[in-house]
Image (tube, rainbow, N blue to C red; front, side):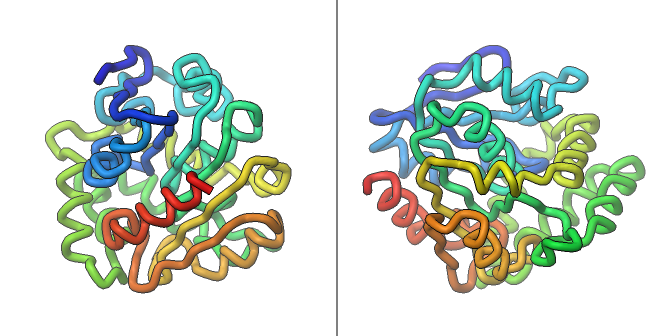
Length: 259
């Protein structure tokens, strides 16, 4: 087990390389149980995004081009990639910029465009993200707690999901306020639909049918952009299906990567 010093990357496990990117306001510890399971068959590269977990914050570090450049310097020349939520959006951007470096791409509760557009209805209203941005300035802890509730809501295992997300958020080591704002800016302003449609690598999308952030109909819209995308809708899961439906999620991931 070792750590990379710029963006904090924990490397653990054995087997083919698998990069894992967490979602907004979280850090790589959110993968705890999933990482334990996957590390038996894969060498995991567990990334803490800038200003999250054990990664330091520098201004502009979450601007997409800057972040992709920094990740490219620190991660394997070729690997499988797995991104959850915001991490999925970043993974799409990396795969588009460096197609030869991403063997396969797994997107968990992720979409190429999080904000509703005139021609993209299966997404969230931008006002919700802006409310989070405004409330961060007033009370960061309460805002993060509200986001945790939003992620767990709807899941058949919402209480357990909320407990695990809350533990891994590590309230005593919260993400930097500037990083949270920069992450919200990414979610609001980034539209990767064109880039997603141009990807050549095999893609797996996993979504919970009770996700309150991404409507399940997004999968059909994504398939119109990428006809070959392999999609799975997990019954009873919310925005963190790798927690709520851990065994099913792990099976889907490993079956896809091993095909």
